[in-house]
Amino acid sequence: MKQRPSFPARLESDNPQAAPKTLLGATRVVTAQSSVRSKPAGMASPTGVGLDSSTVRARMLQKLASQGIDDAVVLEAMGRVERHRFVDSALVNQAYEDTSLPIGLGQTISKPNVVARMIALLRQAPGLQGEGMMGRVLEIGTGCGYQAAVLSCVAREVYSIERLRGLHDKARENIRPMRLPNVHLIFGDGMLGFAQGAPYSAIISAAGGENVPQAWIDQLAVGGRLVAPTHTSSGQQALVVIDKTPQGLQQTLLEAVNFVPLKSGIA
Image (cartoon, rainbow, N blue to C red; front, side):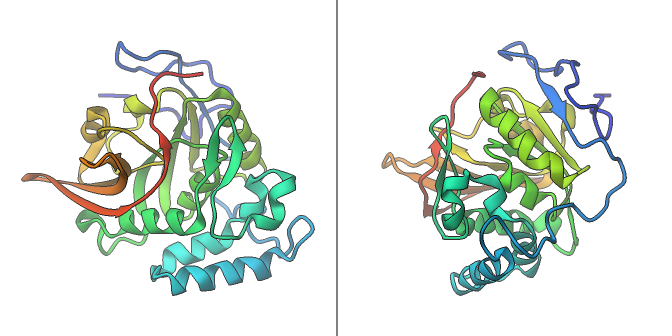
């Protein structure tokens, strides 16, 4: 039987990921030190850095609702997580606009609408209907940690993997004050997924490739759902939803999107 990391794992654990032979570097799991789930620090603060965070977040939620996001659980999670804490101080005043923002190393934080849309799609999986919380979720591409923080509000466990050391460290610093014991931050090759945490009830990717890696499909539980950007025959990106059923895979292609490219290896 595969052994998952201890919960929560020790900060800066040096235990390597038991990964396929093609793994290009050791994986380390980083979590908060408390194993008791409590109200995350920083999520309930009514004010932000130089702005009334609660007011602008309320406006953001109104806009999301007007754009068709009608999942109350997702909207509540989006309202709890203060997006301005995940962007550079120079961009704080744009934190709650419906736009992607640079986070360094050529990467971006996704638009609030895209984050909410993709998480809402995960929650609509046939195998998850009727459950208040999703089970174990794998996020490909931690970035600055914002989406992982939102996922922590709607899932029992979140494993988030990032291939760029600079962003992995940034996400760790962003999330550490929030004390999220159900979030595991992993430094490693996202194209390989994270077999130690599998199977996952949901997988979400913040980067798009030519195809969905087979490792993700293998690590998705039966009844689970994968949502990711992928290239279409026209060369454009679109969201793809893959449901893993007892009868096989069911794939649905949705709207066009624009994500950073999915890459292998670590850097």
